[in-house]
Length: 368
Ligand code: SF4
Image (cartoon, protein in one colour):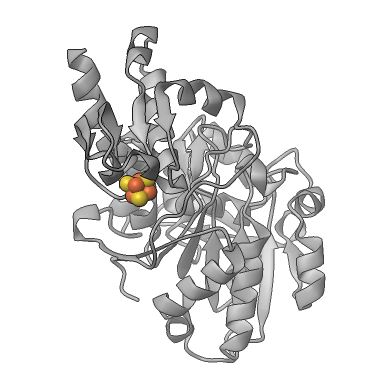
């Protein structure tokens, strides 16, 4: 896998999707030596079930362990340190990891209790937990989601889990962006497996999950976070730590130069659960008929951007946005995705990105 490759898989069998993505990305070749020690670092920020949009689904960790074992790797450790105020053991339990670790007999390191040392992170002194730097290869498994302070959070910010609590507190006093960028010059980001199953709309601790049923793979954390901005309808410049990390040589945010490997087609949304209140409010502007999760989720993110900017008004409910396979060959006023080609105004793409949807809706509703 090259630095500019992006792997993307859709579906609802998250364990099998993980195995397939890692296989297609050639992860075993990236690690190389079968005797290498491999770390898996999910996001267990707080005691919250993954369905709430804050924490990494256990199936991604389980699928990674199964893949690694099948490829001949046996020195595997899962590690994480929850945020200040949350106990990692509680987070582990709430996210359903205990049976997974027991079934696969993989050790877990609570980084809140780990030793640490201070490093020169490109001109900034930063303390990092020993176990996170002791492994030969680190698989970062963040959740693609919104964040109330940094706008988005994914690969780069997930590494805040590998520093001691005292350092997490200090990061907040420093405004997060600069220390996050510098931290990523010393921590390991060898592979990034992104949980884009149902990350939260705008809060790190979850509560408003947006189902998208996708898993993504990257070799570059900066490219990963730039991609996340696009997927949520933000400009990369709106998240300062991405540009700062790029300037420090952590990676490249060049999305135009990225090579996308889409391993399968999007799947229809299947959840029977009532959507979170905030998502439900945005869904009033949508006429969905058999919409794929990735398409629908992108539209919800775009609508959220408009809502935050105060540009979602009741009068726009006159023409809710059509989306979904049930719209194929049907007439309508405005639609998102190639399935709505019969609408008077339709945005191509399968699925289109949130940023594209945002521009399209702004143009259309700007004239309305
Ligand atoms: S355009 Fe149609 S087929 Fe493609 S992702 Fe959207 S709903 Fe699914």
